[in-house]
Image (cartoon, rainbow, N blue to C red; front, side, top):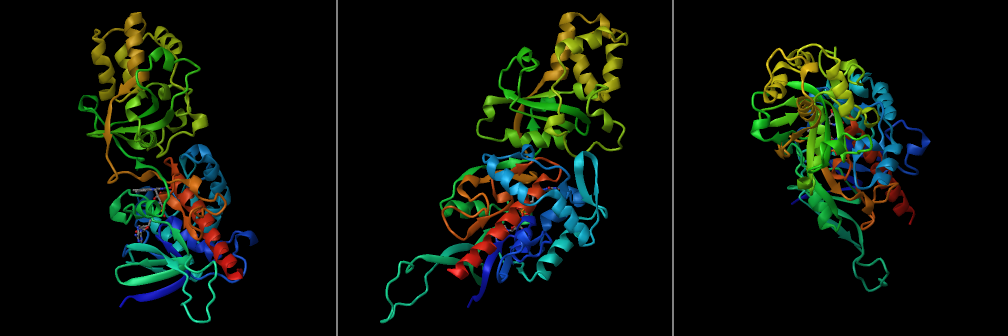
Length: 482
Ligand SMILES: Cc1cc2nc3c(=O)[nH]c(=O)nc-3n(C[C@H](O)[C@H](O)[C@H](O)COP(=O)(O)OP(=O)(O)OC[C@H]3O[C@@H](n4cnc5c(N)ncnc54)[C@H](O)[C@@H]3O)c2cc1C
């Protein structure tokens, strides 16, 4: 016989979103009177399929957990529902999280490009502080409880001689969840099951299937922040090399004249460090742009790489050149420069008396410089100002607008996040409650909001968790009053 548990709110998934939802529902965040649930605090049960909770948190940021970013805005996310994302982000700020962590004895530190880490550099400290707080706030946490099915509970009044039919008869009033050995019943249900990335952490896409089965639409689900594969001739001999680049997604076949024009706007752009792998490219610039490249109409787009502009002395990347390790995030969109114009490139070469090979090797790793030098087929002593117009132009097109042929990506096994997900437009903006099913809430990566690299995905998990947790508590309070 299955054991039956009752709670006002059941939260499925004990990742960052589920834990923040539990804290918000129980009033366990020190966020002022408006953050506390009104009336009696609802009972909350958090279920997770894994034996070890928070596995994704533990592997995040290379085991250091990039908890948030000091500046978070709509421009840091890909979504079809920008108004929802903006409203949700406003509910819980990066500062709310950093102050909360510090108040719980986890001091934090800001690193390059606004990334925030625990001073201890241990993700374990972050996870422990959240789990202690969830339990301390009175929520019960059940590990090894993978939810297999979810049903609407029917109105329970048994037919009896004295029972007069009411409009509520037969209407669903709650939720019943089954795991392998137990049954959980709740008035409100919060789905915080994450996406499909790194399935070994417990994220298997359950929330997507459930949402669809309940009539919700999904924005196409796809791997994001994922290494890209290139054709083998474009990576031969380059694996392991890192270089700062500007990557642009442009409509296929766009002429260089058009791209290099001042009025050209690419479909997406990232500027940061890029790493060549055996199969293609990774590193922040490639990972960020990958989220824009794994969509439906990839065949309509191509990727252009600029290996030159971030090596200019006045580039916004200059401040990182002397750092021991390149920053693990890209420049903010407002800071991201356009690739250097042809006229400026030509002027640089015309004023340069050094040999082409020397100049290229002063700015690019040696092996990468060879990639650009060998097709020029010039004597090694040729100086930059001796290049013909045709040679200069060819060098410009290759160095500043090199076309990369993306053949695929490394898939969910390597993707840091899952893009797409439950369509936010079918949820209420202030509570993340389903418009189809009262009492059903969603939060975290299961939703259609994908952050770039740098702490933005955790911030989304917190803010959406807080909104859904509060929404569920309000729902329970309102159903008590009814
Ligand atoms: C390697 C890696 C490094 C990362 N580093 C960072 C970083 O430094 N900073 C950052 O901002 N983001 C980072 N991210 C992204 C970030 O970890 C996620 O976006 C975030 O954890 C999502 O939180 P979530 O709570 O929505 O989902 P998850 O953390 O995936 O949690 C979902 C939980 O639901 C449980 N679950 C799923 N299905 C069921 C079911 N049927 N029944 C019961 N339980 C279920 C799972 O076991 C899991 O514990 C990283 C991701 C990866 C993979």
